[in-house]
Length: 265
Image (cartoon, rainbow, N blue to C red; front, side, top):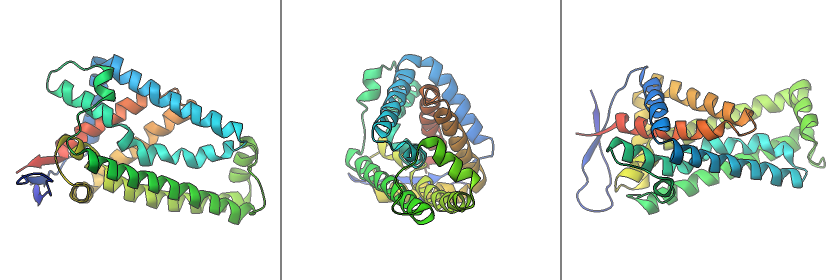
């Protein structure tokens, strides 16, 4: 049975919201529905993905210009941490399609957000988490490879990371710390951002509901987290070109995760 949790609506009497228990098939259903919507609104959805992929490539070119391509690996963590915030426009696409309305790229780029200040607040928190992760990665690099060593070429860095003892230890420690940070941010943002996008609710209550949703559905949400990881990794591995499809796919699916997990009593 769904369990009720009072939200903290920022305006007026708040409705009581409940976290619904879901099945192991739910994450696949979210992706299936998102896939259908992706092609139903392919122009705005794929254009949104194209913008995101282009910005990612520009970031890589910027790192290349500073001889810091090795930072691509830790910076890629930003896709997992900031993804729910960057997908705000896709929630507008999914919501309009759900209502049977037409949707354009303009709608996606200028979404109607019910709690804009709260969305911005959580976005800042996720951005801080990303900066913390990058600083941790730089610190670990300095510890294992020396503080006086500059960034090596990307191919040399990959060799050192995967084929030396220090590199493997760095990879293990970094994966452990990064995984813990990713798990925390995933629990906080799994449904909180689409929830604040759709309803007038404060960030703390939305994050509490998101954490509750993960806690009440550990199996399905574990599967969902791994699907996000694998699909995003595929998009990055294709030199970001795959993000044109994978990013809107996950953004639309996140909306459907919210719609199934959070209900009114």
